[in-house]
Image 1 (cartoon, rainbow, N blue to C red):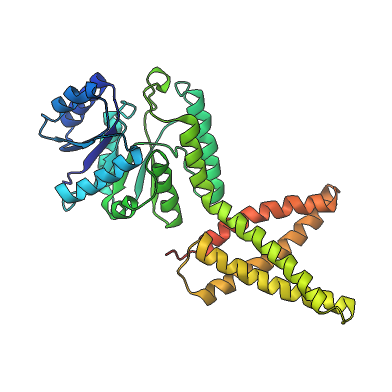
Image 2 (cartoon, one colour; image 1 turned 90 degrees about the vertical axis):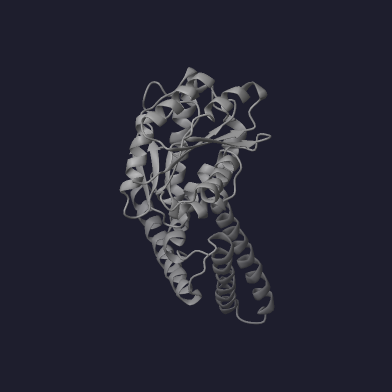
Length: 358
């Protein structure tokens, strides 16, 4: 039987709720519970000292608040160095405010123990429940939609704190950026990029006092999360825009250089040379900066130019189709079609062209 570790980051947690919660976890067979006191005030010292009297509980203390992400990473490191992971399938991360029922924690424990291949387990709340605060309901739905669009995985609860993490993934997750709530999102992004298996498990949806116990800062932490989600796409956007500028500059230079030739021929030659140079620049920037791929360069280049050709055909074909069906301005129709293809191309380049990651 595996002795998995339950990790609970805590900053000024509700004392009575946490005391009863820890007692219930122990009653349900949890033998290793690691609570990270993330810089709680002196008022909570007595509570943490009391919890430490349980032989199943250890307290890891931060002198000052370092954030949930740092608390989790330090806990992962502690699990390896102090307990070892030989008789452990992984860890379960749990919030300290009582949102995650003991029954759901046990369910994730059992699922983690049953795994024959590693998979990140995600406790999935029902955001259509009337008990869910407005900001949590729609904030999560928006984030889930964006995540699906950019990374191709439909996760109904991207901000869940109840996770079962197999030990095969822990060392990789310990090295990820993020010190606060954005760290948990970075875990999902890393998993999506590196094809980690993810399994969503339905859990109870519990909120106390309209989620007043949360330390999540709606504006600041949301901005950090969305910055993280869009970081790869913004790099991709920059690569595309800078490629277009290089294409125009090279075209301008070549038409000037070939001014003595017949105009039509000069335009054709200039267009071809400019497009070859700008596309090579775009390929190298996407490969080394945007997607950070370590695969075979020539194979990726072939896939890249196949995608470019297919995208060109789709652009022309769908603009013609749209014009026949709707009859809008052709330039506007092309803008719509190419915008959609731009996002699709990002997904295809991430999952197919540059799929081998560093």
